[in-house]
Image 1 (cartoon, rainbow, N blue to C red):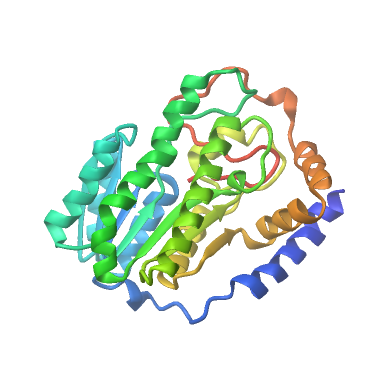
Image 2 (cartoon, one colour):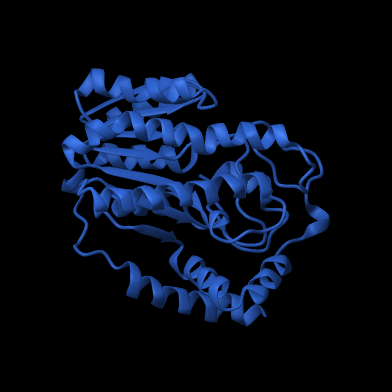
Length: 311
């Protein structure tokens, strides 16, 4: 089992990644120079790292998250790194009106938009499902409905610029695992909605790309706090993950799987040997270490026993 997890699955997944998800062209950072980009959930973690990468590439950046003080620091750093411009709007995505406000801010500031990177996430937990339906309803507002609201509001500008929608999701939205039932439900919703919307764009000749980013366990502070004591998988670096997200969006890829070896290996097993995958996931959970009460506000969670979101 250990050899299979550490060697065979990553190699198999890496081969699949090369075969199915090779970019049609090479990425060049000049692709982002002068582009107008919104990044949500950008006060820390993967979102913060995306803002820094985009700044180095000379993009115009509008970032958003809950905490104004953190956003201010990120904006200052983006300006130091060479962003064409950098600004922020603080607020909670629990209110879809705020989601629309962020897009309107971009329209008022730039008169258009080239890339919408949806990365924010609501407070959830890593524990047994306790029957809290209200929590699921609230999480759907933040993790799903606000994504839809921002997309709807931004779509006229993105159609005009023939731009990109980048949706940061998780392997928890492709294969279920224990202790993340509400979170996983919202990620499955993203997959269904944006995959369906992509079909409609193609049918109507709408030249706006949709890239769905399926992430594994990433070494963000929040993810490490939530699950490092309860799963056996090593995390992947947030800096590299952030760059791969930007790259996949600029190249208009259908999906990004990161880290490719592990995520692709899991998805292959999901289709060919789902029972084996379930056993593998459970074998990598230290169930006795799983918290029975919600962790501190704002914690982000990857799927148990396997790579997760952490964005």
